[in-house]
Length: 214
Image (cartoon, rainbow, N blue to C red; front, top):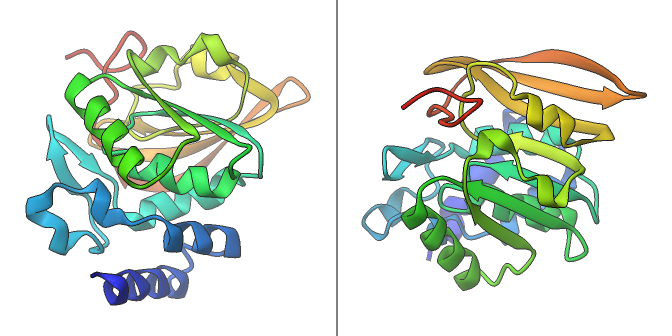
């Protein structure tokens, strides 16, 4: 139904260098974003903008999903932790990159969004994602360490548990700040931590023990 809109979006993201690799291109082609947005705004599914999904939360703009996927340097078979499931779209893209032997654990603090994300993922035929209800700022110790961790909401600082749960070597992407923030790339290598600023961005706040207070 929205094949042309999807192709136009992907071509635009490639033109602007948000999508740089074939593996990310293929993931965007395989995931139907229209299955991850509310029915009343399906016509906007391939707009390059955030869209409201309820509970004052949004599905990230496609260009931000592309930036994060490229910067994470995802590989087949990796274990990934996502903080902030939302509608499940971002995790769905990641799932196509890490492949059927890879695994994504995603944490969402709103039960209705977690339930809806599970339903969206099921309808999209995606089976290598587990959605957990909880405080994402504390990570998910049960399945640590993770090859990659990424956060889809803005933290006041980098939560210590996420650094601890990151594999060595590993990559963590997290927006730090308030409504307007810096996307930070943290790399753990040889037990050393390096941080790189990737530029300004806008995300809803990370709420929790190591996040912003409600």
